[in-house]
Image (cartoon, rainbow, N blue to C red; front, side, top):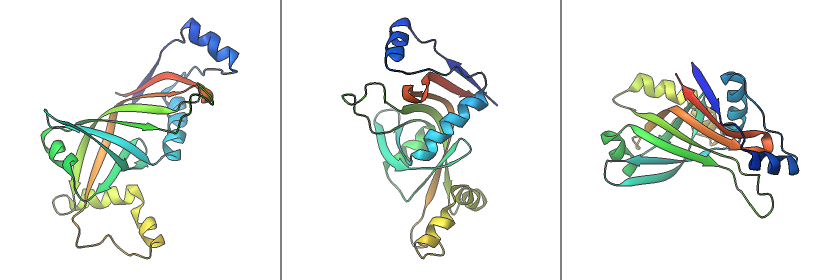
Length: 182
């Protein structure tokens, strides 16, 4: 279950949007917004994951795979895992290239706040295999001429279930819409 909230377009923005030929959509259901959001997420493959151990924040660009609205990241290591051991709360952003001089209203991006879970190949074999299936990794490995992940590397999967996502994309009619898991 989910819900959405949409900020009313302030008059100065409404005037600027109208002058630029932009019509902002009014989403009446979470499902309608999720369809638009998923199109954006499927066009992109890199997020910037922010973790914190309570003292030192860390932001890491990572390739993600999406299944429904759950994000999966396959990784062999790094400081993000030390942070995740101490704090499962994360945030991330995804944005497309933006040139404000070419088109000021052509920004496309989101911020998300979430809870992450680390799945270890050895400690969580069933959940790890299920996540690999959700990620469609075998299809990618086949394209590379591989039958399995290299066994000499201990992989982990970061499973991220967003609690809240704030998305903006004026050219496609989305202005300050927040999706929340209920």
